[in-house]
Amino acid sequence: MKKISLLLAIFMWGGWANAQVIRERAVRLDLQAAQSFGLNDWNNVKFASDRLPNASSSTDLRATLNIHVFRRTVGLFHDIGLGIMPAPRYGDSDPAAQAAITLGSPYYTKEITLEKVNESASAHFKMTFGLFARFPIIDKLSVSPCIGAGFMTITAPTCQAVLKEHNSNMQYTAHYQWFSQDKYRYSDDTTLGYLTFRLRFAYRILPRNNLLFGLEYTRFQKRVDFSEHYTNYFNYNLVKTLNHKGNHLNMLGFSLGISL
Image 1 (cartoon, rainbow, N blue to C red):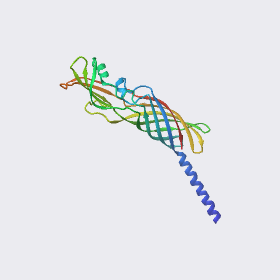
Image 2: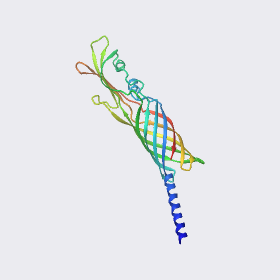
Image 3: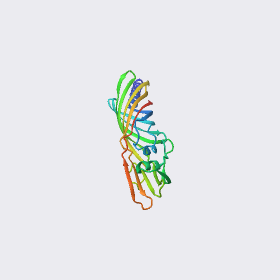
Image 4: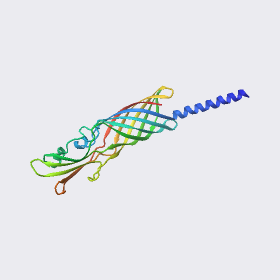
């Protein structure tokens, strides 16, 4: 009787241990670092792009939860992380130069009445949801195409200045606005949605751990629109307003990591 009980206990423990392995392999956690490079700029207006984080690159640190939902080949992923972008090219660029382009006369900045500038590298919260499929290539090596959608937080710059025309007594109040076309409401934190396409390779280095490397492409869906408004400093009459449509920022990069 004792032998039967012992064998039954060993069998139950083996079944439980096997179930644990199955569950662990069905749900995996990835830790990754990704480096992406911008293929274009936020906006075609140099002044607008100069005050935003430099789009030339982004270093992402993220944790990704992968859940297989169909025969270990198709699943869902969810990642949370930070995207670190370099400081703006010219975070405190002179608005008088932009006014000269728009109004056609030389100006100098008499006073900055409202300004929020980014002068250093910045970290942006990122979250992504998506689907993946897993295909074995050779022993220990597999590839997973992934498609997802997510968002990134970003802080909009603000700028309002009093400009004086050269060789004239004329003065103008200049309002510059990112993301919103309302010159009386300045944006603070906003979110930029994006679509991402990833090709992730996994090489098994231990029974439960994979070395990860891959390629990825990200396209931001929300454009960084920019507007400029000029009013007569003395009578507040609107002199000129221009709205500039932003670009869809596109980024291409690679990633390295480990799957637990």
